[in-house]
Length: 92
Image 1 (cartoon, rainbow, N blue to C red):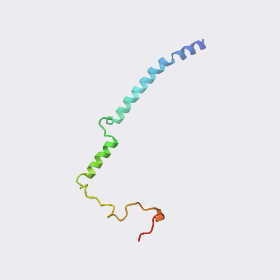
Image 2: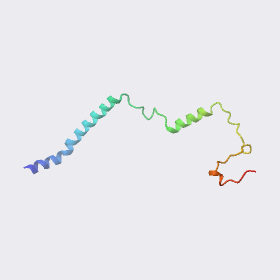
Image 3: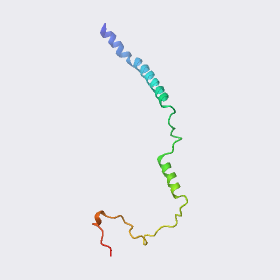
Image 4: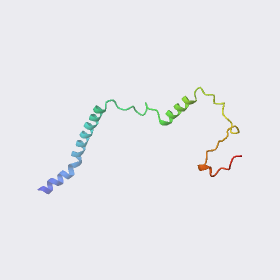
């Protein structure tokens, strides 16, 4: 008799487990929403990282005259310094 009962429980387990898991998930979702308050902004409302970077760069260059740059001939040193100046010839 027990083997028949366990076989019936085993065969009907998905039909019992799914509704229980669904109710637990639904209650957890609403409980989390209640505790956190307003949901975070959706993807359409947020700007992507690349858009934020472009906006920041545009704000940085606003008002600057981009045509006035120092030429490489006028710069004294335009290459990065090597570690301990081992790989650079001495300046005369």
